[in-house]
Image (cartoon, rainbow, N blue to C red; front, side):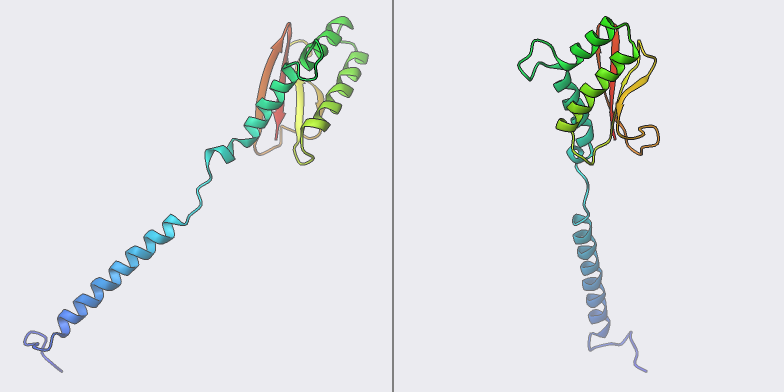
Length: 151
């Protein structure tokens, strides 16, 4: 066995240098791996939120050249017919046609009136209560308050 204290050939220096180079490479590899980790951007996470707000904004605005927005027409139908069952059917057909045009097939929605009809679902294609992620847009018109759930 050789004596490390009386080492004149530099084995200890060589081992020390190799260990420091190995540690430096490990730190550089760890940093490189951390820079490759995907972090979702906030714009990707809030896409459904933007969609729900955009759809509700389209419903509230006069985009089709008519004098009344969809929210105004729905509120007018309800107030004219005293929230009857026939008015609910008419509103459901209006909403189903609207959502089939403006939403993708994979998106689920529920449109609810919360003030006059006590949270009755007017149009839906899924169960928003059991969904993992739900985004809500709210608009009021007159005595009616509408919520759009997109999940």
